[in-house]
Image 1 (cartoon, rainbow, N blue to C red):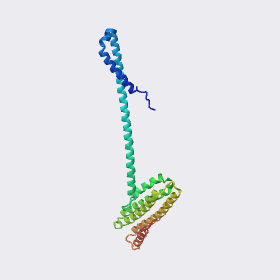
Image 2: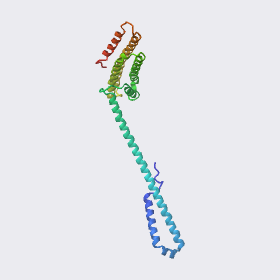
Image 3: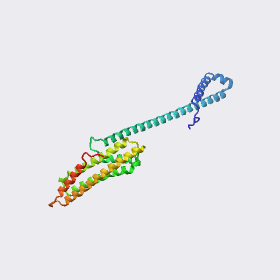
Image 4: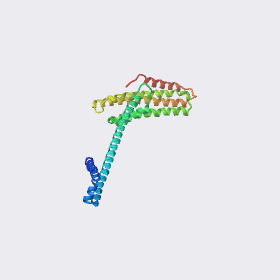
Amino acid sequence: MEDKNRTPSPVLLLIVSGLYLGLTLILRFTRDDIIIQQGIRFYRTLNAAVLIVGGFCTAALLVHFLLNWNKQQKRKRAQDEETAKQQAALEEEAMEKERHREILSVSKKMDSMRLREVLSTYEAGAWIELAQPIAKIRMQLDIMDEYQEKLVHLLETNGADSLSNTNEVLDQVEQYLCKNVRKVLNYMDVADEDNERDVEQVSLRLTACHEEGQKQLQQVQEFLFALAEFLNKQGDDDNSMDLLNIYKSTILSSIQDESL
């Protein structure tokens, strides 16, 4: 609790200051009479006392107003800081909504990394009850990235520039996985994490998304092995290219117009 008696009341100080001014004027106009009746020593003593009281009141008033001004400045700074924090929070919330909207946008290529960030947020936040199935889907996107990196490495180390179009196959699979994740995220956005039925529905969609993702990842892995086999047999008279094309066709056909 603030100590209200730390400094004298400003009203009292103003009253005393007014009395000081009045006494100063009285002393000035009655100086001669006081000296004649009471003596010069009494006048000097009285005048010194009035000056001391006046100086104290002036100093006390100055201190009071300085302290009051300082408190007002601190209060204003605190209010400005709080306003700035609230504004920053609102802006961050707006930016987060915009980022979320962009992440789930179907008008452009989806970003696997940013989807994983959203999944991590849900996994540790409101949907922590379903953290394990969410983590499984997030890990599938990690695995897809690893497969893409392995494909690039395989083509580069073997100088297989003519097979660069295989990158597009894996890119299409990745976008397919991302779109399936988007479907689940959209449902999670409208579902109530405290509603048992909603949680069950989200859990079912996470399971379906994971199962479909596993099927696609299995096909991609088999495709990579087929590609490695084809590169190992370059120059040989075999049907490895036909097998590779079969894998490509199987993958592409499996992600056409499919949904959870």
